[in-house]
Figure: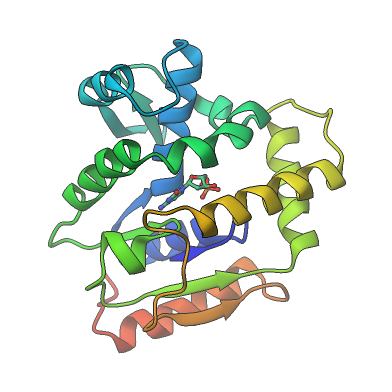
Length: 220
Ligand code: DC
């Protein structure tokens, strides 16, 4: 699943994985984790030997904990800090860096396995898995996306942002993600479109499940 920021891709990819007994990987969380890590440790956020050295040593893992999956980076668990406004602001420039993308795409491809995988991001259908059996390009109205991101920030205890500020950040990221040189956000030519603005979580899952079953996925 690919699409703009906060359009519900992760929810759909996670729900579909759980319905099919597949593994789910949030590729955006990987870019967020690297961004968080570089900021947290005051490491370089531009191309150069120091960034490449950091990327070489970064170990990213999705580990099961209390019935859900948490992301760890070099043993640290950033948790809700992954969704902070600081990370929201820096993640697009960091994820546009060539060496960051190369390092993440290599790790993302390594998650592919016979048991099945769903992954969401910006370049999954176009670049990471061009041969994926099912590609969905997700869209949602801007005010709905902003409301979702605002709720996420509030959940993390960050109540200082207005809808307008969140919307501005989403637009900025969409713009940067769509216009970077390497693997920009694009709808894959063979993707199926989904606008979930007026759909419930259950409805979008049922819609995607039908597509997955038609492509040969088997209900566990
Ligand atoms: O899906 P998200 O909003 O959590 O992603 C955060 C940022 O990570 C997004 O603005 C751009 C980057 N990203 C990317 O460049 N490629 C991906 N496949 C996924 C995310």
